Structures are given as C-alpha cells and as structure tokens.
Length: 637
Image 1: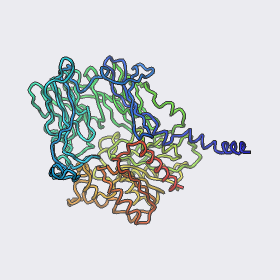
Image 2 (image 1 turned 135 degrees about the horizontal axis):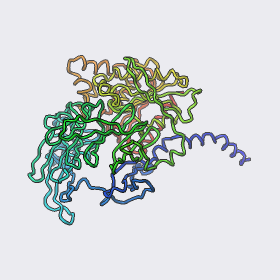
Image 3 (image 1 turned 180 degrees about the vertical axis):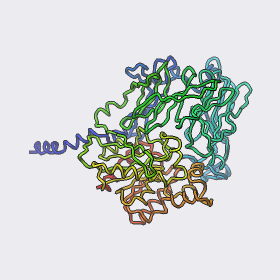
C-alpha cells in the first residue's frame, strides 16, 4: 500500500518537478560561471579568460583561469598567466616595473591624533570626501611606484613615486586602465584627480598626466579640459588616445574618444550622436574600436584615425543584433575577441570578423545549464510617449508563453539614471528569472538612457520626476492593453534611480500597481543631498544644494521629492538597502520604511549590513532573490 501511495505522490508532484527543473531559478542563476576575458596570448594563438563561480557554502566566488585556441576547441585550465599574457606593470622594453601601493598621507583616526588613546576607534575629518562608495576615508592614497629592473628581471634600485599624493589608480574601482606605457618605454601616462577634500567631492575633473622617466618630470596633458579624462592608451605607433567628457560635475556627459597626434587634440567622435563606453586601438594603429549603446543594445563600432590630415573621422557600426558587446579581449589579424551577453545568456567569449561583423561563439561555459531550461522570449515594442516621442520598450515573456492566457506584469525601472537598458545579464536584476517566475517584464528605454541620441540621454538631468516618470507610465499603460496582461496584477520594481522611481510612482500611480519593490532608492532628495558622498551628482542632477533659491532646485527638492507624496501612498512596498551604500545612504530606506509603517501600509524592510549599492556575496544574493519573489507572490495574488 505504501508503495502505491508513494507512486501516487510522485505522479501528482511530477509537473512541479518538471517546472522546477525546466525554468531558471535563483539557485541555478547563482551556480552559473561568470566569464571575463583577460587577453590574447603573446604568441597570438590563444584567448586567456577567467571563470568565477559562486560557492554558496563558503559564501565566496572563486575563479579559475583558462586558455582556448582562438580558432576554438577545448579550453585548458592554467595556473598562471606569467609568460603567456603581457604584464602591464612592466615596460615594453622590460627595463622598468610599476607597482601599486597605498601611502598614508592624512591622519583620520582618534589614535593617530592622540597616540596615548590607542584603543579609540573615533574618526576625525576636517573636510568632505570622508567616505567613498563603501569605504571610509583612511587618509591613504593609491600610488604608482617606478623601479628599474635588473638583467635577471628582479627589481633594482629605489622606488620612485610618480603620481604625487593623489590617487592612481582612481578609487573606488580604478585599475590598470588608469595608466599606460608609451611604446618606447620612456613615458607613463596616468589618470588622477589632483584635488583634496571638499573640492574632490564636488568635481569630476580628472586629468591625464605624463611622467617622463628620463627627466623625472610630470606634465598635465589635459590642462583646461574640465570633465572626466580617463583610460589613456597608446597605439602601436605611439599616438595617445583616451576617453573624455567636457563638463565638470556631469558624470554622464557625452563620452568621446580623443587623440593627441602631437600637433593637436582631435575628438574622433565629436560629430557622432552617441556616447562611448570602452575602446581599444587596432593593432596597426590606424583605427579605434569602441563599444556604445544603440537602440537598446551595446554594439561594436570603429572610427578611423586620420593622423595629421584634416579628414573628418567617420564612425562605422560593425556588429548588429539583439545582444550586448560587454568588453574587449584583444585583436588577432582581422578578428577581434569580445565578451557578449543577452537577456537569456551570461557573458561568453566571441570572435568578431572585422570585415563582415559575423560573430562566432568561442566559450560555452554555461551552455549545459541553459540547455536544460526553457528560455524567455524578448521582443521590441515602440511606444509613443506623452510628449509624442518614439520609445523602445523591451518586453520579456515567460518561458512557454501562451498569448491566450493572462499573466501578471512587472514594470522594471532601470537605475543610473543614465545607464543603458540593453541586452544586459544581471545576477540580481535578472529579467529572464523574473519572466521564468511567470511575469511579463516591461522594460522601457525611458528618458536618460544612452543609445537614442545625446539629447534623449541628457533630458533627465534636473528632471528626475518629470518626463522619465511619464515615460514609465506610457510604457506600462500601452503594454497593459495587450490581452495577455492581467491588469489587476501589475507590479513595479527597480534599484538606484529605479528605486527612486518606485518611491515616486507609489505617490502618483493612481492604482495602476498592486505592489512595489525599491532597492537602494532615493526617498528624500534633501537628505540625499546631505548624505551622499559624490556631491557632483546631486549638484548636476538636482541643480545644486537645497538651500539655493532657484526654480530648478526648488522643483528637485519639492515636486520631485518622493517623501513629499507619502500621504498618497496606498500600495504594499518592499524596501531593500545595503548598510555600506554611501552613494545612496541607508537612511533613505529607513525613512521610507518608517513612513510606510506609520501610514499603515503593508511593507517590509530587507537590510544587508555588509553590502554596498550592490549585493555581492552569494548567500545574500540568494536571500535577495527569495525575498524578492516571495514578496511578489504574497502581494500579487
């Protein structure tokens, strides 16, 4: 009898098991390998890459390094890249080596000021920039040190600090892209923001500095260029290129490729209506390849370097399709190696034919996992906005979608605010996973997103609660007309500016939404100004500090302040925040949760004391996913 009872249970439960095995789940998502390209081997035959795979039990993300023939084949694990990949710390002629170390410059702790109080954990600051991203300022600055290398390859002689008492690489996330050797090994060009304290916190003016090894002198190469100047890179012919923004304080300004041909500085992308994300020189130094957002994707482009001629550089798009080119790995002959994603697939390595744009997949790290599940379908829809513009909206449909059925829907609000909503693959805001849980996901390319012209990108600044919010409503109202959308079960989710959007829409949505989820969102624009560490952002985006008497400023801190509309809140809301998020301080979440609770609104606070603006640890990532989908299931009935 027991045997037949067990058989009956198995038969009844079989559809559940099939569903669980055939759909993307949070656990499967957090088991995928995360591929990142490291470079092309010095002999030009192999692609070297890294795969980082979460270990839930150890709550870590260890990595392994692999080599694969550029023509394809079976990858081989390698223990070291020494003598396989060029070492950017070593000069091209092998005579010099750079090292990076923090140097203590400023006292910041109680025991440094008062040595007799060595158990004090007090912090003492006399200016701003007392913390950045997720780290308190400790008075130490990252420095480049230069050292002569002996014939045996070992360092010899004294270390020379080349970049003065300012950060290089830039904090919080700078790396090897912040410096480069000249091909003749006589010069080092590096990026630094040579400002201290409050001046640092209100400015985006980074410059490129050239250190001459022979004369031991430093020259500012971008004197008078007041925005971000970053990513210096020499061509094989010794021509320096870099990424440049014009305006001090505008971190989302149009990003251009600029070259210095020795006689003049030339903006190669000045007349192109887009913004550059990343670039690299061609091997022959005659053109530059770059990536940029375009129409809801990130594609590969090229622009010729005209040399000393007066020829106007022409931008040409190389790749096309519904995918993102996410990074460069290197070039071999007429082929460039990149990483690529789409909404259904995490990054893998591809080759691109530079003549035809044809792509060939080289790595298949997660293919077995994807082959075991049903993938979502995504489609484009172009919606007319409230001001008569055409807006791209991505629609991600549940696996096994049936147009005769009705599905709950989620309006996905992208952060940034000037970040492209493209064919990205996130291990937290994973649109495939949302669709796999039975939701139609509506993802608008609202105002502020690159890929639709510079004017579209810029329009959100000083208008955070204006047209971009109306774009969200235009998108969800239009998609809600589809017969497969259950109009009684629509939710709204987002992080960062997307979290701000959630808080704002909670006060104006007129019962469109049945639930909200806000992660690291701005709830109170005044307290945001008073606590964020990168003041250039709020100065530019809000028009200045809240105490200035100006119509734009007044609008930012009143009309566009979500906290001013709490009296209209009436819908359940889950509020998520990281304790080490200094960009959008944790107090934003606490204020919002407290307001919702006191208003009697069904609400929940999910707090991660050790996470920053993101959620990085595997176990916290799974808690995030389980709470996210648990909340939706509870409130979207």
